[in-house]
Amino acid sequence: MRAPRARRARAAAARHRLADQSAAADQAERLVRNLLVTGARGGHGQVVRIITGKGNRSEAGPVLMPLVRRLLETSLASYVAEFTVDRDGGSFLVRLK
Image (cartoon, rainbow, N blue to C red; front, top):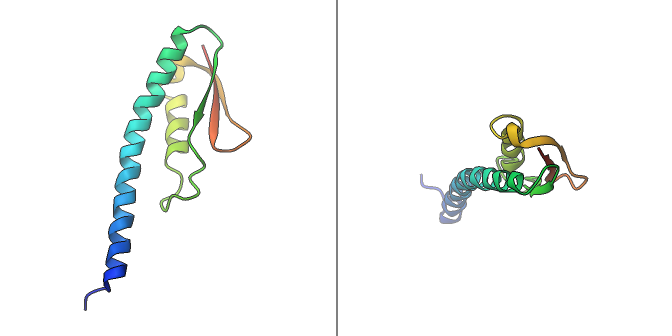
């Protein structure tokens, strides 16, 4: 028995959004890296805000927030003096070395 057309369309849309999130995550990694590398050239102690959103509307849960946190703690740590999640809960404040 085949699923009704509307259900198939919703399932296809969900798969598409998941693919978009993967692409967004790949793009986000490049953007964050470029932001920190460029910002680090601007001088010691600069603070930048990286807006990730909270991930409330993502069916799979937050994607960008954990990705950016992992980058700041690992591969981009050499550019980061310290970072914290801002009060809004959907962005990081990053002080550059």
